[in-house]
Image 1 (cartoon, rainbow, N blue to C red):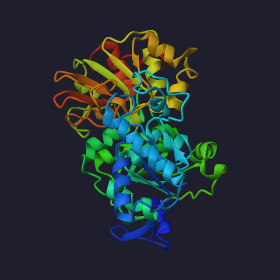
Image 2: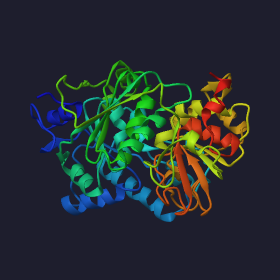
Image 3: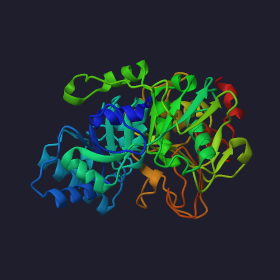
Length: 456
C-alpha cells in the first residue's frame, strides 16, 4: 500500500520503510521551537526531569523566538524573557531571537523600534524567514500554529510543554501516525479572494473537530499556483479544524524559498521532497472550484461558524485588525493596501506586521508607486510593531486588544473564541485581509468585490 507525504516523513524519521495510520512510533525530531509563553514551562519540565545540569539534545536544533507578550509593561511577561535568556546562555543555543531592546531600555512604548535588535517577530513567520522550515523534516513547537510550516512539505505540529521538555532532552518523541484528509482546489484564485477564504470554507464545511488528529493535505492546481505565503495561510489554520498537521506538496517554488533562507551551518542542506504515492489512501477527500467560491467570514464565536461575506454584509463594526501569523505577511498587506490606497478608514484599524522582515518591507513594497507604510498612514490606520499583539488578547496594554464588551471586530487573525482577542463578550468576525480592508473603509462588513474594480 502506498503512503502519503505525512506517512513518508514519519517513516523516515522512525527508521522504517513504511508506517500506517494509527501506529505509535518513536521519531527523531529535526527542530524544536518554543517562545516566551511556553518556553519557561518547557524549561522547568526539562530541568525537573533531566536535572539542572542536563544538556539539551542539540543546541543547534533548538529555536527560541519570543513573540507573544513583548511590547508590554507586564512584569510577568518580562520575567519570562529573563528565564529564556538565562537558559540560552547556559546551553549555548545558537538560534535565539532576543528582544534585547527590552533589556536596553526597560519598559518600551508600544512603538519602540525593534529593527536594530535580533528580534524577529511571530515565531511561525520568523521560522521560515530564518530558514528553519525545510521539506521532509519534523518540526515541533510549543504552539498550536506550528502547523504553518507544513506549507514547506514538512511535518510540523504543536506539542505541549511536557512533550517539549522530553524532546529538549532526547531529540525524540512518541507519535501516532495520523490518517490524511485531502482537499483539492481547482482553478485560479480570483482577485477578490485570498487563501484565508479557502481555509475558512474548509473549516466551515468540516467543523472545528472535523480533522481531529488527522493530517490535512492541500492539493490541486489551485494550490500549486499559490505563493508560499498563501500556502502558509492554509496550513496555519489546520489546527482550527482540529488537525494534527497540514501539508502542501513541495515543489520548485518551495526549493527556491528555502535555499534563499537556509540557516543550519550556514550552508544549504539536503532536502527531501516527498509526494503522495499514486495508491496512497486518504480517509476523506473534498474538491473545491476556486471560480465559484465567494469571500468568506467566520462569525462569532467559532472559526467554523461559516458565512459568505455577502450574507453578513452591513454588519456594524467598531474596529478592524490586519495582522498575526495568519494575516500579517507581506502579501496580506499588499492586498489590503491595494484597497486602502487613496481612502480613509471609518473605524480604528490596526496594522500589525507578523515579523520585523515584513515590517521593513512596508517601506520597500509599493502599491502604484506608494510604499505600503505610507498607504496605511494616509488611510488613518494604526501601525504597530511586529508581534502577536491582540491576536490572543494579551495584557491589557497590548496594541489592538479588545477591552470593551460591545466591541465588534473584523480580523485577519485565526480564532474568534470568546475572549480570544481580549474581552470575553466582544465579537470577532474572521476574514481575509482583503475583506478586512474593505470593511474598514466603510465601517461595516463589506464584500471586497464591491470595491475591487479599482485595481482589477
